[in-house]
Structure formats: C-alpha cells, structure tokens
Image 1 (cartoon, rainbow, N blue to C red):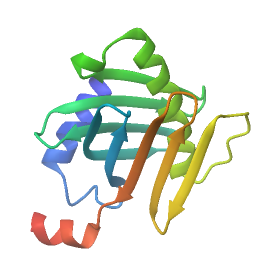
Image 2 (cartoon, rainbow, N blue to C red):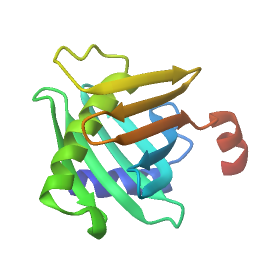
Image 3 (cartoon, rainbow, N blue to C red):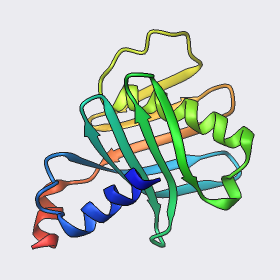
Length: 148
C-alpha cells in the first residue's frame, strides 16, 4: 500500500520529472453488462510495475503492483463493487497477461486470450469470461503542454 501511495504522490509532486518513466493509457474494461473506463497510469522500475486505474470521476478503481521476479500481480485496492474474491482472482490473471502484452514480453503459458492490435491501441479479450480490456496510449505531447 505504501508503494502505491508514494507512486500517486510522486505523480502529483513531480509530474515533469517522471514523464519518461510513466506510461499512461486510456483504458476500458468491458464486461458485457457493465463497463469501466478511465486512465491507467503505470511506472516500471526494473522488473516491477506499479499502476493505478482512475475512472472518469477521479476515483481510483484499481491499484496494483507487479513483481517481475515472482511473476505475480498484487491488487492493493479495488473499487468496492468489484472487491469480491472471484473478481480479484480474474483481475490478477488478466492484468498479468495485459502487462506482458503492453511491455512486449512473451507469455510462455497456454491462455484463453485474444489480442488485437490497431496501431498503438491494444484490445485483449478474455474468451473464458467475456471480458475485454482496451488500452490506447495517451499522447504525451499534449500532456506536456497541459502540465506547463
């Protein structure tokens, strides 16, 4: 939890210094009957990734940490309506696969995901549960102009 809070504080305190190390995506999680949209902010340090998904209202929906040495995703915070053990389990697995795709790593296991790339945008579908994750990188040039 401490790592996520430090990460979020550093985004507020030092936004220009961290632009090169921070990746920002517009993200949509579509679950058929419901969807969740917002901005995913991730920072990679060596093999570890710390990230947060913030919805349109500015509420943190998902905070996570990926430990590259152990190949595990730890969900630090999940919005209350999704904070169920069976949803957290699927989210952990799906986020781990999404990180493999977003960071161009080879996923060496069998999986039931369909990956579709359209330029820089990536759409990942969990065929088993019918959940689609869509990632589109945010333009950093526009972000630089806004932050100045």
